[in-house]
Image (tube, rainbow, N blue to C red; front, top):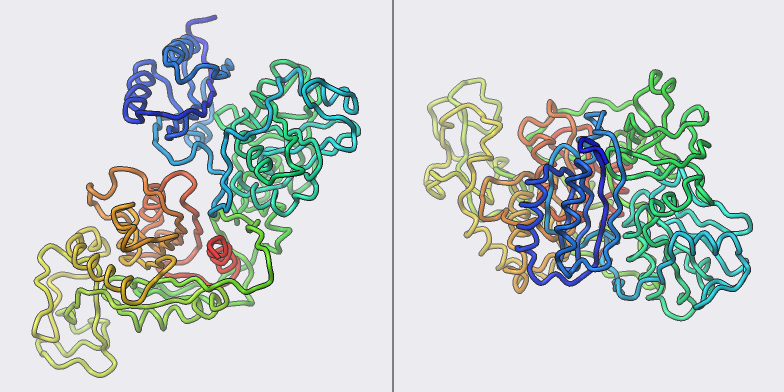
Length: 607
């Protein structure tokens, strides 16, 4: 082994971790001292690690990990590799830094609450690469210890995402292969629910990249009871299989991997994938082309990339999404809504599943009750009026309740006679506000805020500052007490929808975690044009609450909250807790397709 040879290490271990802080310190010290980069995810139930570095350093890391009895029996998968050559890919795959995080789940199996969450202790029986190959080779013949008994009772189930299966999968004569065609792993439970009859009474052979996804998915299938007992999984995943069968065996094409290598093939150079546009043989994801709508990877050959830089994946095409011209939208300080049904789809960075949990019975479910928090210098009446289209389109599944924030603000006006506020009196004059000038409120205020003033009008001490929200950090305790009262008197509420500063306030509530559960118990939050306030005490650990983040992608159209700011807020939530809808407009909540469809999809998970 050359001392300068680079490699990638993958391993996972499900085990009860007694001291997460100690384990975190070990990984931080060990990986940094060895110069390892990549992702380390720690949870109370185990670890999931993908790191890269010098092979000698990886071997030293493995020895250090093995010294801990918790990792007894762990399958450490090491592959030699080149250094990341494509900076864009290296950044996207997390191989330019070391990320160590404590998470609730090692892999996010579901985006919505499951009635019967799977227990990994109930996972399917492990088959080694040789046993897996033998089953496929001799399908219909008996094997020891309850292995599959005949061709008609054996099915292959691919537990990976659509973009992975498009460049490679198992293929065995006379054995049915089920490809769920999902955008993300958290969509798999819904697919299993909807297609359980294809699995009932069968011997199910499951596989994925390295094995961890099959642990949870096989346990979920087995949890369905009688008829779902015989589930088997490829131990070590496709990676171990290709090591055992370098010619590919029953695997065709390439194995997609979640590091800078992107994919790993066998000695068989056959190409399984095809260009989405022209249909020519193609399986190279190095350009990282993505669907304009849902952002999953798509295969676009070099020639078609030159012709276009906007693409629609087959899943979005299946659901009727396409391109269309979009008229300009005026920026607004308040939340406005779009209702242009004749327009076609525009960009949306949405990770929302197209599969929904199945529900038994025909009775209409109880509507969700959602408390709506307006933005800074707004009020409930204004926010309700601006959200009328949203409320109308959600009326079958949700009731929106609007309230004023507790901090009442004075009316302000600019000293210039060109002030845009039509309610402002002439310069130097103070007059009662006309009937159409309603009081304005805030959830959070600046440190020099003295409370409500007696005068109706107050001159602005400076021109409009688009970054003023960063200094509005006081008043949380007053707003918290007020919201506790609202939950007590007008609740219960399933979730909160916050806009701008209202979203910031909702995020602060989520960051309190179990501290507020007895008084403010949230099943979800919807954060529109949200931001994270610079309050260190609130962001000490990732937030564990299902969240939908809606914000504009064009920084020129939202003068107040940039997409980078809203995306950072989403990153403060645990892996799998954040769902993002990114649109092309400004400080608004868009309410036409596909955005409205995606909002409904998120909410239906909680019905």
